[in-house]
Amino acid sequence: MADRRTVIMEAAARLIARRGVRGLRIEELAAEAEVSNGLIYYHFKDRAGVLRATLEFINDRAERYTRDHVAAEHLSDPRRVLEQTLLLEFQDTAEVRENSTAWGELRASAMFDDLLRADLAEATKVWDQEVADLIADVVPSLAPSAALAAAQRLTTLLEGLSGRWLSGGLTVDRARELILAAITVELTHLAK
Amino acid sequence: MADRRTVIMEAAARLIARRGVRGLRIEELAAEAEVSNGLIYYHFKDRAGVLRATLEFINDRAERYTRDHVAAEHLSDPRRVLEQTLLLEFQDTAEVRENSTAWGELRASAMFDDLLRADLAEATKVWDQEVADLIADVVPSLAPSAALAAAQRLTTLLEGLSGRWLSGGLTVDRARELILAAITVELTHLAK
DNA sequence: GTCTATATTAGGATAGAC
DNA sequence: GTCTATCCTAATATAGAC
Image (cartoon, rainbow over all chains, first blue to last red; front, side, top):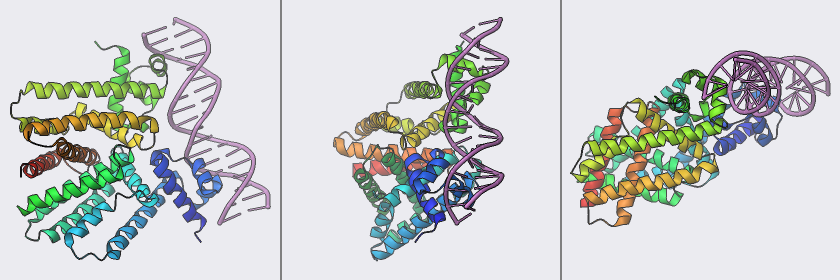
């Protein structure tokens, strides 16, 4: 059974998905987690501490499900691996929603907070390179810079789609369609 | 010369670009606009009223500069029109920054605010269709649904690029490169 | 229309009992 | 470890003079 500290972070993840990072209220968090106001300050230094811990918590969960899903399907076709990896971000489950919301919030916050920018830029760089490697598996002859550019167009499109999905501008299904089509368009172009 | 009400909205636009919608403080706004705290409440009902008016103000300015720029260059090649229209969003000027930031903030807020969702969805739809029409000008034989899908991939990519640019993940120049390349990739694919 | 001064409230944080 | 009660500050909003 999860300890109280974890219960609080789980509640915070739900609340962030519902109200955003900047909408998270300590009192509301206490209610959602069914603990007292004071207990939150026992487990975390302050509001920023709750946020840091929760973001890390969400990130760990996300890495786990990405690894698990791709492994579980033990795909051999590199193109399928690329497709499935990107499609993972478009599922209407609490976990994916919470993760995508947190990521969007992080990016939105980074626009006004210099401290976040460096971390976010680094995480983005890693993610772009991972996708570039997947693309290189599909089209082995590709120049690294071309693979990276294509990867950036896909990951950036993915972020845009995610934003539109979560703000109600797009259904999950439409988002899936568009990212799949974009992969096709990019790969046909690279193979030409 | 601009009246005080306008001065306040201009100041709010600058402040939103610097601190975000949710970081806008009335007192700080008063200082930036060089008016008193109380005057803001004379011209606007409350904080939300300031926000509504300012967002509308920013939107009007943006429509104007888009119209003006495309008209000023009186382009005849439809592909150039498409390119220039999308590239307009990537200029490091105060006006474009303020507009893009506001748009990003609007989308981020819409994730947690049902009232905003409808307006935003509508504005997005209009924008997507405009770009779809530009694409149809380049490739006249195209089915409307195919033009719309390509337009959505481009406008959504643009939003993603804009987010990365403003959060420091990408230079303007890199963003311009990537959107231009994406246009090429899409158009070659549609022409095949 | 504009300012200064002040009321009100919300929300983060702490103290102290158990 | 956990709760209740309370404090403190920051930020919104109003009143009233000019």
